[in-house]
Image 1: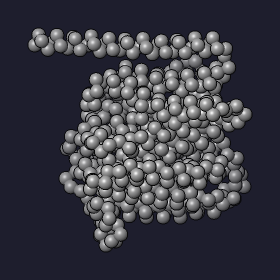
Image 2 (image 1 turned 30 degrees about the horizontal axis):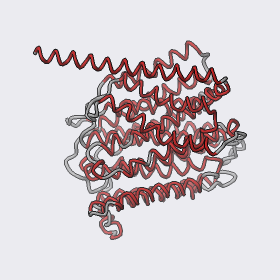
Image 3 (image 1 turned 90 degrees about the horizontal axis):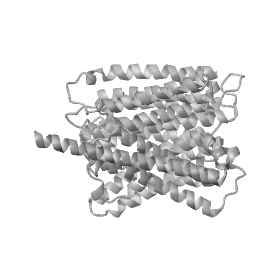
Length: 559
C-alpha cells in the first residue's frame, strides 16, 4: 500500500503535466512577447546544482546522507526550472478580463505543483536511506533556483508580476509538501486501508496532496456557468468584480470537495485522524483572509487607510489561531494537512487571476501570499522541533537568550535585503550581478551560523519566531510605498530571506551545533575569519563595480 501511494503521486505528476500542457498548448503558440529572463541566472542555477553534485561525488560515498542532499538539490533545481519553463511559455498579455474567473493558460499554472509532487515522491521511493536530507535538498534546491530566476525576471509590468508570484506560490507548496513528507517519516507508521502492513504517514500525506492537486487542476478549467452563478449570488457581489467572485466560488467548491477527500482518507486510517477539520481550518480560514484583505483594500481606497493595517493584523491572528489548533495534532503532521487546504485556495486564486486584472489585484495577491508563507514558516518551526527534539529538550533557556534570538530573527532579513539592494544604488530596475547574489547568500547563512556557534541551541526557537514575524512587516507599509513592483517583488524579499534562514537551520544545525562546544578562543577565531572574509569580498565587489563604471564612462566619452 505504501509503495502504491508513492507511485500514485509520481504517476499523477506525469498525468497532470501532460494534461496541463495539452490544454495550454494554444497559449504556448501565441505570438506574444514574453518577459526577459537573463540566461546567466539560469546558468547559475544549473551550475550550482551540477557543481554540488560533482563535489559530493568526490568527497562523499554514494547513498550517504550528504550525497543524498546533493541529489535532492539537483532534483529540486530540475523541478523548479521545469515549472518556470511552463509558466514562462504562458506569460502573455490577455485581451480582456475573463468572466469565467479562469485566466488564459490557468491550467499551465498548475504544472509547477504537479512537478513538485513528483520531485518530492522520488526520494520516498528510491532514496529512503538518505531521508530526510534528500527532502531538504529538494526544498533548498527549489528555493535557490526560484530565487535566482525570480530576481532575473522582468520586474515591471503585469506579466512579470504574475510570473514572479506564481513562482513564489509554487515554492510555498514545495515547503508544505516538505512538512508532510518529513513529519510523516518521523511519526510511527500506522495501518491504512486493507493492508496489514503499517504505512508511513508520509505516504498518507502524498495521497492528500494528490487530492489537492486534482481539485486544483479542475478549478483551473474554464467554466462559463460559474460566472453566471456568481452573478446571481448577491452575497458574493461585495467583491469588486464578477471574475473575483467567480474565483471565490471556485475556491469554496474546491475546499468542500477537499473536505470530502480528507473524510475518505481519514476513514481508511486506523485511528481516524481529524483530516476533515484540519483541511476546513486551512481552506476556509484562507478564504476568510481573502475576504478581509479585499475589504481592507476597498475601505483604504475610500480614505480609511487604517483598515488595511487592521485587516492585515487580523489575518495574521487567524493564521496563529489555526496554527495553535493544529500544533499538537498528529505530532506536527496536522499542520501539513492544514497547509494543504490553505494552499489550495491560494493556488486557485493566483493561477486563475488574469494578467489584465493585475493592476487591481497585485496588492492583495501579494498580501495573501505573505500570509500563506507566514503559515508555512510556522510549520517549518514545528518541523525544526521534530527533527532536533533530542538537542533541544534538555536545554537551559534563559529569558535573555530567547529575547536575543527573537530580535536577531526580526532584524536579520531586513539587514540582508538592504545589503542586497545596496548593490543596485537604490535603482530597483537594475539587474543584480551574480557575484553580489553570492555574497548575499553567504550573509544569509552567516547570521544563523554565528548565532548557533556562539549560543548553541539556546536561541534557535525564538530565532524562528522572529524570522516569521519579519515576513508580516510588508503588510503594514503605507499605501504610497506599495505602488508599482514593490508588493510583488521587494515586499516579499524579507519573507524569502526568512525562509532561506529557516531552511539553513533545518538542514545544517546538526553540523553547527557540535561546533558550539568549542572553546571561546576557537569561536572568536572562527567569527573573525568569517566576518573578515565577508568584508573583504564586499570591498572587492564594490571596487570591481567602481572600476567597471569608470570603464563604461570612458567608453561613452570616446564614442
